[in-house]
Amino acid sequence: MLSAKQLSCINEVQRLYQSRKIEMDVIYDG
Image (tube, rainbow, N blue to C red; front, side):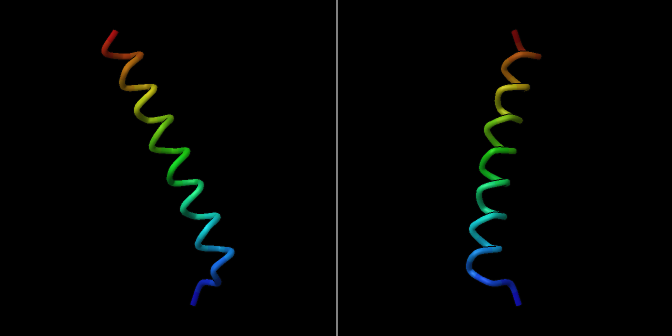
């Protein structure tokens, strides 16, 4: 079972990854 702190870290990493992935998609589209 994950602790709340671990979950918040995972959510933060996923959020950063999503924003980075979107940036890369925009760069490759351009």
